[in-house]
Length: 356
Image 1 (cartoon, rainbow, N blue to C red):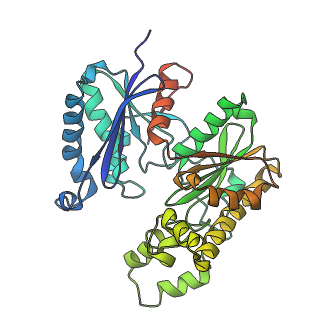
Image 2 (image 1 turned 45 degrees about the horizontal axis):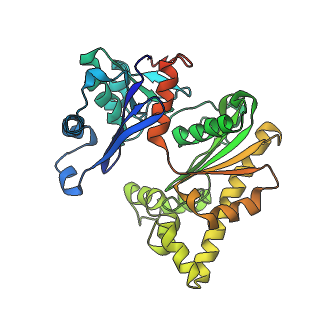
Image 3 (image 1 turned 180 degrees about the vertical axis):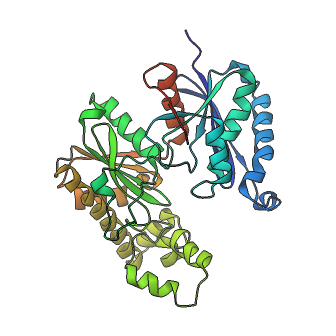
């Protein structure tokens, strides 16, 4: 049997997740925590590179893993330029772009460099898969009402596409022949439409439903008034929209379980807000249906919030008229990365090359 052992690397804001897979099977995984005190020693995110690499190497050594035993390294895709869905081989252009000119600052931008540094001395290839910047929008779906400002596709592509592929595999469906709307329900919520094997339309977190942390789509003129009110700096306003909006703005917590405890104790406002979030999610799902003239085969709810039966029941009640609804809870990023690169190793997919 050919070597199908894959090292998976997924840096986050306060942790670095690593896992080892053999084929589709996880051998072990660890989440290495990084305290705020530890991270405060670094001026910018990329300064953490050597620290995180050293911790990964120590973890591999603890588990008795030698880098030469791996067939490939799979890295979380960072804020690259717009890319296609699927795998990209990590190269110098990719790591330089993510270091010096990324679309946004996030710890995932280090993943490609970490993977390349660990893989290249052993002659092993490193890959990313379904980066946040996958953009396969139909040109007409990218239009807006202000010339020169097109919509851009940014979302939870790794988890949503993995959910779509898993659903098709489990139900003996051809992904390329199935129209699916997949909603990732997490701290931020993004929704995309899969048709003819591509993600041809989507609703981003800045234009869609509010979520535990995000304010979602807001009345534009009111936001302009807020921006020019003199009450906020740009950073303060962005924090209010991105990190302290949604459930946090109502209840001071992003944990839906705490909100649902309030509901269980008779809190009418909490019940009202959760129903409002469910309605906003359902409306955003329905918003994508016209792109395929209403021919939606399935709707999939995934992400951490999909563990909530109360929330998914509310959403299903409001959207089941459109298509059957399936629940695939969880954020299975590590598994999705491993399975994506496994398809490359098995020559079921060909990795793209990012070029200037």
